[in-house]
Length: 412
Image (cartoon, rainbow, N blue to C red; front, side):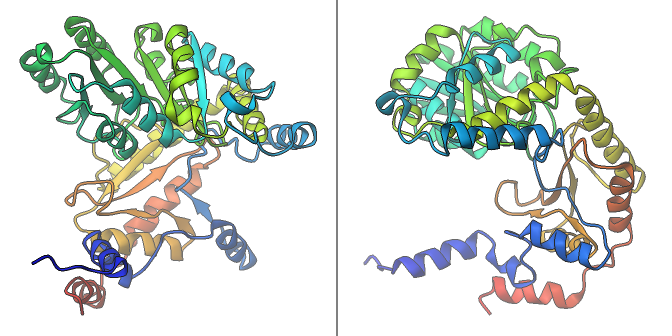
């Protein structure tokens, strides 16, 4: 006999399985960082966040603020409707042309969310039951959700193991009509990259399509921040689709998909996440467009970001910490042996003015808890060395902390 539960009971059970017992010890999430900063500064203490995506340090750039204010006065706040049914603003297509040209692609389409960009593009493109999607086992949830939302068969290959991908395609390619491979420029949990030249060779060998998610590689990889293709010396025109976000390097929000003009023209009239969603706010577009131009003018920011991330990785290794496979660009994790130790480390840092939320249970394997550090061109050497020193000075996890979590996990 089926036991019927209330939605509240069901949610409580699912939340417990997701690891909410860890929050009995401390809850570092949803911190109001502006309030935290103000409180630390009021005490004469320094506060620094390693939890935000402001890779090139443009979020508070005066030109971006000025352009956003100017757009409010000129065009107002919202786009007011889907661009297909309600029309668009004069700023939409110019930004799309600029981001496409910057990335070396023919055309681009912007959407209201980077997450949505992956979900709707993958699900819509791979709409046949005889299609297949091959994704890295550590792919971002937006990629997984897009693949799960398609009727196509989904195959996962071992992380960055292109021999395994080649093996799977050799065995199964002829079973499918259309095949899409999806990888990331920089993987957001491990800070490593895909091997684009090898992927393109596989793409050509098996006559498949390739989508690269550049969410964490725009402004991060390549001498001028153009992403994975520039970083690895590849012509981006050989990539079928590039998906990205404006919420990181471009100091704004929203997403985009780039590809051949004919593909993007088709998407413009049919892609569900675009057709049935409101257009990007003119204010957001103004901020992103200004950030894109600043990135090309102030190229020192790209080099400074790389220097900061490489310094952190070097200092972390000298202190005996593991940074996994991270290449030292943009995102670098520090791995811990347990969820409790990771939560403890995060709390210790926060108490001392360093905001680095833990990544446990959700988003990484259970045996891979970590503190994930996002770097910015604005971070100083003192801040980078300081946070590592604070981790070195961290006291051991107390028995009380272990007991609190154990009792909560047992339902006590």
